[in-house]
Image (cartoon, rainbow, N blue to C red; front, side, top):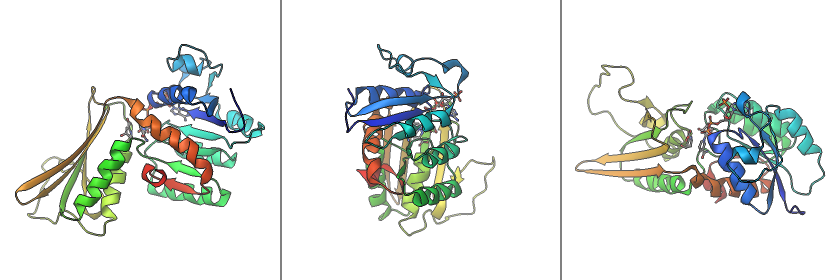
Length: 278
Ligand SMILES: NC(=O)C1=CN([C@@H]2O[C@H](COP(=O)(O)OP(=O)(O)OC[C@H]3O[C@@H](n4cnc5c(N)ncnc54)[C@H](OP(=O)(O)O)[C@@H]3O)[C@@H](O)[C@H]2O)C=CC1
Ligand SMILES: O=C(O)C1=N[C@H](C(=O)O)C[C@H](O)C1
């Protein structure tokens, strides 16, 4: 049943691994209603979003590959709560999706990773000018927020740290958005890590991973059988301190996604990271 506090939501990437999970979560949230489901995959066109998500009932929302008509339709409906677009699509698509949503006055909750620093800056400008909330969340799980907080604490006492992120081999971008954010949080602590101990030679290019800001290295593993995992390993003389987060089911992201949908209406600009809205 819809009422004045029901939040209209459209899901972009509705047929994907995360999109289906989001549709299930929205269908179970009494304060939200699915108003549109977009996915460019030809195999999903016209299917009911609820049935595709594995629900026993149809939601009467067909999957379409046309984002703009859905944005226009939702923007034109008379509703008291501002509509939200959740995006779990592809690194190549997310920038344009977010710009389109903001142009229609629809607030984007973005889980898709792979936006460049320049794209993030442009989107922040765009959201600011439109006075529209925009949430970009590289990882919606509470476990990663806690891992990052522990890493920030540890970084005050350790000068050596490397990050290993491990994901399923369908992932398009590397390093993961989570690893990039984790490295940035550590780099923002105002010190340089991993002072060189010897002159290193990579006998095969990439052996030492990629170099993020302030000397922090990130290593990316892609294998079938994995979902999403991250280790932050600190080293000092005679000791190793390892922080690890493991995802065993994508439902772990849903409390964060629902929180973001509920909170975005309070924002008037771009906010990056789940920790900012907890
Ligand atoms: N922030 C977080 O907590 C999390 C973020 N992610 C990120 O979310 C993104 C999606 O992940 P995941 O669900 O696993 O990926 P999937 O490939 O399973 O799903 C993406 C879906 O979006 C479709 N798609 C691609 N381009 C567009 C477009 N332009 N418009 C609409 N639909 C499109 C894809 O179709 P097709 O297959 O035909 O390309 C696919 O059906 C990734 O960037 C991933 O890193 C994932 C998990 C958690
Ligand atoms: O592609 C994924 O699966 C994930 N992507 C996000 C990332 O790049 O950090 C979040 C999580 O790691 C799962």
